[in-house]
Length: 167
Image (cartoon, rainbow, N blue to C red; front, side, top):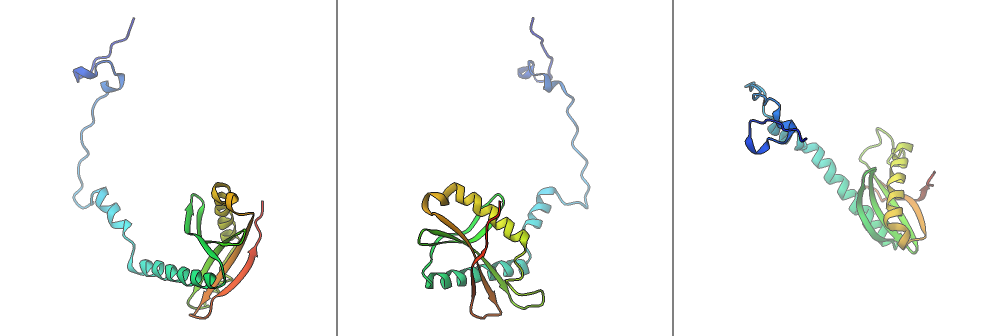
C-alpha cells in the first residue's frame, strides 16, 4: 500500500515535503541595505590595498627578470592552490626552484628576509608539496626553496636554498 500525501499544488501531491506551510516573506527594514548590495560593496577593495597589490606584482616582475638574467626559466607565476600561493616557480636544469618574493619599502618592521616566518615557510612548503605531487615530479628531480628580497629600490638579494622541506 503506497502512502499518498496531500499537497496544495496538485502535481506535487506525492512529495511529502511540499505539505509544509509556506512562510510569509520577511518584513523589510528600510535602513538596512539588501544583502546583495552589502556584499557587492564589501567586495571592492580600498585603493590603498589595490596599490599594495600592484606594488607586489611589480616586485615579482623585477624578481623574475633578475632570476632570468641568472639563467633560470619561468615555469609558473602566482601558482595558487588550496593551501596558499607560490610567487614564482622557476627551472634550473633538473631542479624546480620555488621562489618567495619579499618587498620592504622601509625597515621599520624588519628587513625583507626577516619577514619570512616559520609559518610562511610552512605554508609555501605545503603548497610546493602539492604542486610537486600534481605536476613537478614528472619534469624535475629536485626541489629547492629560494628567496628574492627587494628593499628600498636596491639590487635584489637572492638567497638560494633558503630552507629545507620538513615532513
